Amino acid sequence: MRTVIYPGSFDPLTNGHLDVIKRATKLFDRVIVAVAESNGKKPFFTLAERKRTLAKVVKDIPNVTTTSFSGLLVDFAAKKKACAIIRGLRVVSDFEFEFQMALMNRRLKERIETVFMMPRGKYIYLSSSLVKEVARLGGEVSAFVPDSVEQALRKKLSAKRR
Ligand code: PNS
Image 1 (tube, helix red, strand yellow):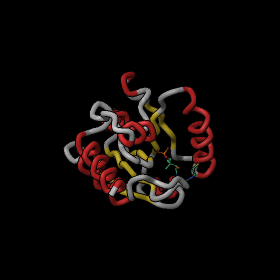
Image 2 (cartoon, helix red, strand yellow; image 1 turned 180 degrees about the vertical axis):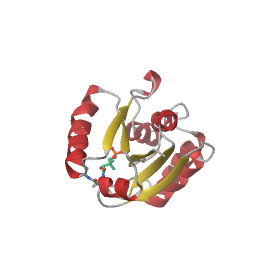
Image 3 (cartoon, rainbow, N blue to C red; image 1 turned 90 degrees about the vertical axis):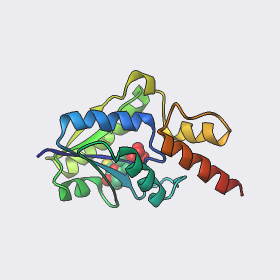
Image 4 (tube, rainbow, N blue to C red; image 1 turned 30 degrees about the horizontal axis):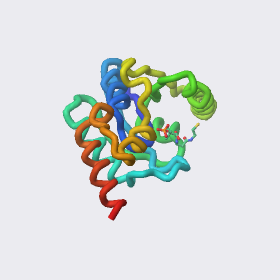
């Protein structure tokens, strides 16, 4: 049984994240998508909101479960008996941070590998931050996020404007 953790802020989940999740299910028996409770950034969606939309989006994908974690990612991965961590790689600018993080995680827990996966080319420019900005400024985001995320974005933005 090979378990992998796909960690992230998922603030919110994009079609690029979803593409990586589906790819991961082809390589691993169990994919745990784990929302980071905090990584120093002030999230737009609360942890509960991020978890709820994520769970909705992946509910029909076999072998995928969702949860959240706090503390060190490698400790969480070890607790879940995962052999690897998945991270998506899009553009070269992702590489420096991801490389550093992968090596630090390896230093902290040697046996847990980091596996980088590239989303489909059409998602390469997507990021949660850009999606939020486009939505905030009234742009159309339906091509970038699953339906339930789009709805959650609309709801959150109208609540913030009130
Ligand atoms: O989606 P993100 O914001 O790029 O995800 C970053 C995340 C949550 C994977 C990273 O910040 C993380 O692993 N946080 C947990 C704390 C930790 O283990 N920090 C040391 C990483 S080397």
